[in-house]
Image 1 (cartoon, rainbow, N blue to C red):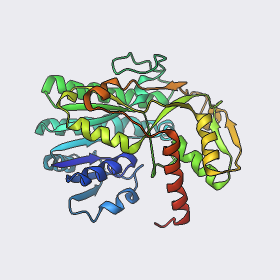
Image 2: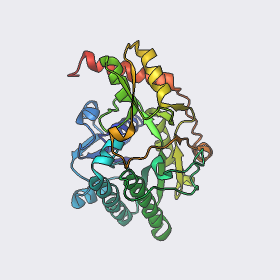
Image 3: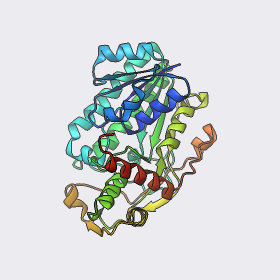
Length: 326
């Protein structure tokens, strides 16, 4: 079996590519390296069943060729990270909507099976926690750039499901909640690598707002397990499926755990959110998934606790600091 992974040099995509290779698949990756890194796939380059292309998914002739060669398409390419979304809204909208439109149109011509990764951001400002896949979506006003991402991912879902209903395209949509692990970087607003880096460097751990906002965090390997199994599950076709953890924790508690696990003497510093982004930015109080559908379809049951996740990330970042050229 041959898989095409768009965004395959990114954080999640590179883990997925590696896992598929380990299962004996042939894997092709395309990535423009805008947020991904060639370093993420360096160790895969020598694998006889792996090939990669550095280019954009907007390159239609190239994408047509790559899709034609694949049996399954994992579409992960997207603009990611709160900071990038706020600072580059045009890029966010164009990449997420136009890119997905191109991929779906080409995949539909060959009637290949496709899994599209969406985001918990589509739930917006909903307070109906835990979030279920058929809940109403509550988005903020267009003057706040953050909602451009949520809206673009929702449009991706609408378009994918339209292809499923009208053209019988075998589509699966995964709404990913906070996925974390080694190799994730904090440059685009990802909170855990940013806080770990600050703790290891001895600088203040910057918590935005009062730190009481809560999230669930899922180990990237468990997310990749879910993506692999959903692709092979016939009952998942045409479905939207939450993939996330169940251990709800505040950002302040995460910062405190990182201080403890690193032995850092750094202080925790609270910064008003509008000083980090702008006055039109909105943060969400809670993000907790209902994962009953994923449990029913594939037996998804994430078990890696936040302490173990943090230990792995800390060990990886310490090793990188000790050997930055590795």
